[in-house]
Figure 1: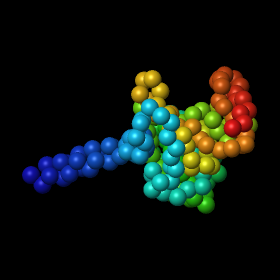
Figure 2: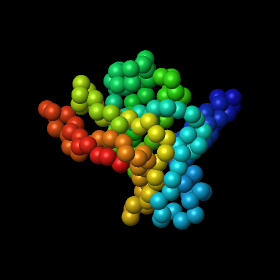
Figure 3: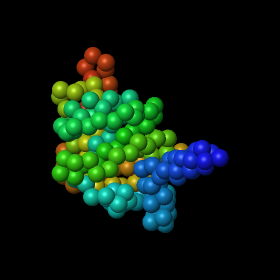
Figure 4: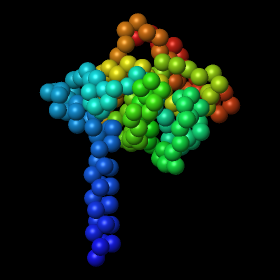
Length: 174
């Protein structure tokens, strides 16, 4: 009987936290503050996720912990694999992890732009954003799409992947 209660409590906790992933939090926030969800809406990701940060990393599916550590330049260990069709968002403040979550890209994703191109790890799927401000829009399939807001800043858009050469980027000025 005691074991059944513990298992039930763990299942409830798992369901509760599973419903609170970054994508669901952003979508819920946007739907609550943007009266017409078909319009583009401006958000501050710090406000949405209730965490202060100065750098955001987005890693693609199957990225390994040692690769994440190498990209961020800080110690990182995790035994959780980034699943197929998911991204891992890691927010840093003064090179310390202040937020980490995996989210499914089925309903929401970030634009394929980055503020930094790594010439050493060309085969690593990751994006770097320093600004917490985003424009959120909804596409025809009712998926949310986040675009970082910055004026007169150089960005790089991922345009292609070749297994021998890695990712290629084009420069974009916003």
